[in-house]
Amino acid sequence: MRIVKVTSKKEDNKILEDIMRKTVRFMSAVINMVIIAVCVLVGHYFIRLPNNYYVTKGTSLKLPCYFSVDVFSQSNTVQSLNSKVTPLNSKVTLKLFGVIPIKDVNVQAVDRPVLVPGGNPFGIKLLTEGVMVIGLGEVQSQDGIVSPATDAGIKMGDVVISVNGRKVTSNSEIANIISNCDGQVIPVILKRNSEDMLLNLKPVYSVNDGSYKAGMWVRDSTAGIGTITFYDPATGNFGGLGHPVCDVDTGEILPLSSGEVVDVSINGVSKGISGTPGELLGSFISNVPIGNLLINNQSGLFGKLSNAPNLSSPIPMAMRQEIQVGDATILTTINGGQPKEYKIRIEKIDLKESENSKNMVIRVTDKELLDISGGIVQGMSGSPIIQNGRLVGAVTHVFVNDPTKGYGIFCDTMYSYANSLTANTAQKDAA
Image 1 (cartoon, rainbow, N blue to C red):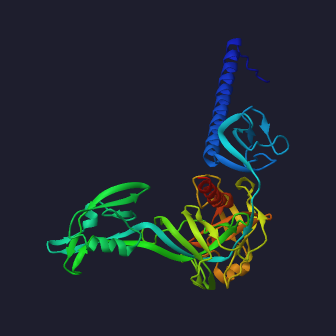
Image 2: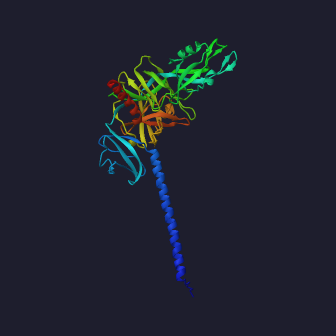
Image 3: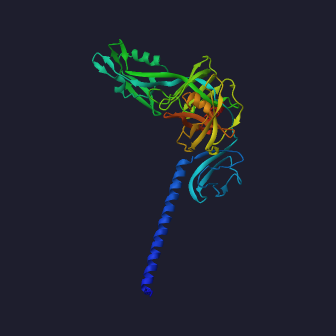
């Protein structure tokens, strides 16, 4: 005999209301999760996507995003490679899924640069603008041990521009002024974090050296070896290194006063292992300059070469949004003076503008290069990265604990600085 439970209408309504409440709570939770996910995506792309882009004339901006990010003109019409093209200079709005605004960005349409990829080593001779303070010390005076520079407020990394009203550009100049000050307080103008400062320095007589001393060590020049990334045959401009030349003691970017490019030859390579980066071993062939250095900044060294170097054939430059995760090659020199192409893989791409020289993570896959150098070594900085027949960037750093991997910089970043040399020259000529 089967017993059937009979419920009242009131109980049925209560059950139905309970189901409805649970359904509403579930749907609210789902909607909240979707809203949170969308907000996270918008925030992610707001930070990761640059505010400025180059595109080639006749095309429009197309972004390599996992989720759909559409580009809208100010008239709110969608742009794509298959429809409208970007005006020469325009502001567009990026929208997630074509609906949710992320931010406005600037897009400049340009003729695609055609550059000669480098890979050749070059010698660097750099004179600083002013003299950089690389250390502070103490002086044994008649009244005891003192530190005049420290007492004056001078710090490591400061760039001394003038002392006692005289502009200084060398170690010997500043030493001569201080030694002849007769112990008088002298004004020092220096630059710290891009700001000019005026400090008062009172050198003391050193009983050990028999002259007046300030208790600081300074540097006015440096030399080294890097790799050319590209040469622009239309202007004679070049870019190299992909990261700044910094002082070995302070880690600060050396302010460039003037600099020269000289020929070098690579004699061998010290193989890199985990924990110990390798290094290209080279020497200057001649002290006769073959070019001038004009910019030293976060994105590399830039200047002009006197004569067109014996490099590869010109190839087009890739815009940052055109670079893909996948196989690529680098041109670099590990013996003699001629570059050779080696296989790598681009493993990660970071479009953020805040990253000046670490836009890509790359990994060496070429067996020959791995056998000879262990991967990326010091001195390879600036080696051009080529993908799909286009110049996409340059090697900048090696991972200390894994020399098979390193960082790379976008070529369009480096090109913008090299191209600025031509613009600055045109402005001077017009003036």
